[in-house]
Image 1 (spheres, rainbow, N blue to C red):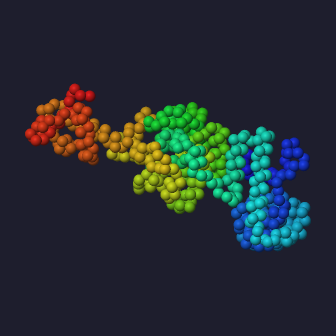
Image 2 (cartoon, rainbow, N blue to C red; image 1 turned 30 degrees about the vertical axis):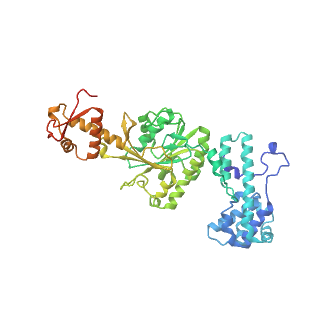
Image 3 (cartoon, rainbow, N blue to C red; image 1 turned 60 degrees about the horizontal axis):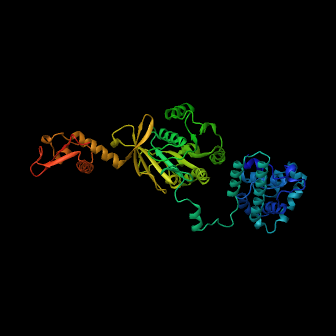
Length: 482
């Protein structure tokens, strides 16, 4: 049951068996009259009141009808005055029961001073929220709502409350109550209460990478050599069912009961309402990780608006709400054609990345030497992830090969062992080795790798050996060394 549904009950005596026949829901008829009269007397107060109230916030049905008529007039560009409002509610039975236009004409006299209407609007709003809170609690007692759903609905009401004072907390209390380490779902990369953005070029493998990550999370197994925390997962996908079925089967998720799916073409709700539903169902289903693939499709942001910082911030708010509810949020986004550094390579405004806590970029790198290798770059507010990690797909699963420096070092080591002779008589100098190395190989990395091989005893070098002069070192591999 949503707060919208609850609001339609108006908070009146819906459950006499529980409330008692003399129970009255919180209300203030005078405050409602002041609001309506103030609008009719001083139209300038209409906009601030509309920013606070909706027609369902009024208790009296006649007041609901009058305010709804005022809003319709405003939305259609019709002047709001006594005559236009009277005509708009002329056929309304609730208003007629209160005296019709005669009652309407008494309202301005009850609103003195009329400029205080916004203040009284907040009173009306607070009382409406109290009635809604009562309805939520009663729905739990009558088994119409689960407790977890009620908690989410009450939190939603609390977020809409008028703010008179800041919810301050001192640093000592905050640090005592907040764990020093994030609650990692994937150590260093994905955490509860945080947003991780994963960006990649189209067809680079971000969906395959993500589903393999999910496989590890559902099993509580390591992924890329990092610990995971087992939890349920909700995947919001833009893909068609046929292609996504293949994606799940490829990594062994076809029988994953704790993986819950939603397809964009099946969901007609707005992005904001969808996020509220996600938060509610996540608590019910034990979901800790929400994957949004892709943010642009699910948020509905238009392509020509992606570079608009304001539109980007609006698109990110539902994801921020999910993170604030304690969920780990993984956003998938497309990389712009020109690429760029992590944090700058994703398509659209930098406001998207600015709202995320961890930024990841999955890239193809020709220098890695293999078509199934990717470079995973990371940067963010939370420490723990490797800035540049080389990953490789083998048997449809990803594994970490090490940092880009480590992989480059290993590649240089393999190159040297292929080029070096196995006997002293054929020994070659360092200069000759560097000249024989494949194009694009870093000379400094080759020198470090050679020094390491010598230190390990895998490579030997002597002055004057092989083609080296008496003052230069010749190098060869020691066949007996491991």
